[in-house]
Every structure is written in structure tokens, then in C-alpha cells.
Length: 246
Image 1 (cartoon, one colour):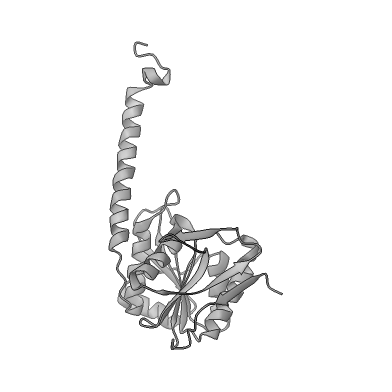
Image 2 (cartoon, one colour; image 1 turned 180 degrees about the vertical axis):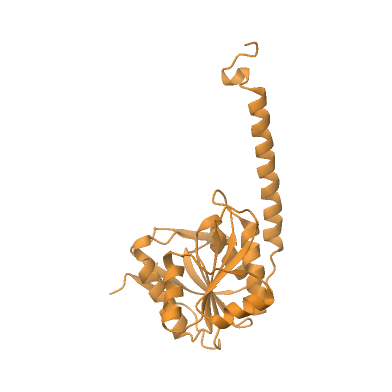
């Protein structure tokens, strides 16, 4: 029996072939940040959670309220389900998690699964990439020029397993990946995957708060770099134990 379980806490039967979006931690925490922004922007309702004895004992606190770290939100208005995780999925649980997500998608008759995340290619061009088990989706992405399909490569974890399942069972599974920093949370990359998702699906999602965070973060990083350079030029100060007179 699987250690991973998905528990529904709401009736989602009014959803008709909903889009199922997932956002898990990864490079730049892009997936989690993007999924959280979608939930907040669209005012989505809490609909369930995922549990496992292998998961970290963690509760996420939002608006003063403790919530499961891996949870489901839904919107009848937008015919959308979002699964968000604010904890890293243990490698040993990846297969079980992917299986349960796939089964859940089938149980709600989802039209497709779209995974959001970050990718570090060290090219610093701010590109957005896509991989899909569905050739129609790839053609749509190319026609709209909203992302660069990846021709050769590999993807791991839950998303990699879902993409393979999608190919083997002819079910649409797509991942949207924005170039992201490995060193810090990247709200700009999160904003880019949301914008790409909006162009692909037609669901309008506000990314204003992420753009603001990205601007503030960029400013603080530049200030830190400038301070570090000035510190190197000046050398150690008297307070740091150095000599001002050499």
C-alpha cells in the first residue's frame, strides 16, 4: 500500500474537465511561489491535502492559519485545480507522489496537468522553456511563441515521472520552466511561468505583487554587491581587527 495519500476536503464535482496545475519547490522555489500566487490572485478555495509518513512534519501558516504544507485549491469560476507544496518532496517518495497526482487528475477528469518550475541553465537570458507529452500543446506553444520547447535533455523528480506517464498513456502533461537563480527565491521567474501559463490557457492571473518583489529583490542584491565591492577596496576596518595604518 502506498505511503502517499491525497485527501479531498471539498466537493469538486462541479468542475468540468479542469486544468490541473502543480507547483513544488525546486530551483528558485519557482513552482511553489507561482502556485501560491495563482491561488491568492484567483481567490481559490481549499480542497484537500497530500500526506505521507515520509513527509517532513511541517505546517504552512498563511493569514494566521496553519495549513498542510502540500495541499489542493480549486476554483469553479476558472475551472481550475492547483496543488502546491511548500516542502521538498523526498526523493524516495517521488514515484508514489507522481502516481497519486496522476490518479487524482484522472479521478477529477482533468483536461491536462501543467507543472510550473525553475531551471538553471546559467545563460542568464531569462528564457522560459517547455516540455510536453502532448504534441498539440507543443505546436500551440510554438505558434504563440510563448516558450522554447526543449528538444533534448532530462527532467527528474515528480515532474519527470508525470511527463513519462503522460507520454506512455497519451495524456497531456506539460511543464513550464523559467530560468531562475539557484541561490535565492526568484519571484521574477515565478511571474514568467505564470504569464506563460496565462497565454497558454487564457486564464488571467495578476503577477503585480511578484513583479514588485522581484524589483525589490534586485535592488537589495545590487546594494549588497556594491557594499561587498566597497568593503574589498577599503580592506579590513579597525573594528574588524585590522590596522588602519598598516
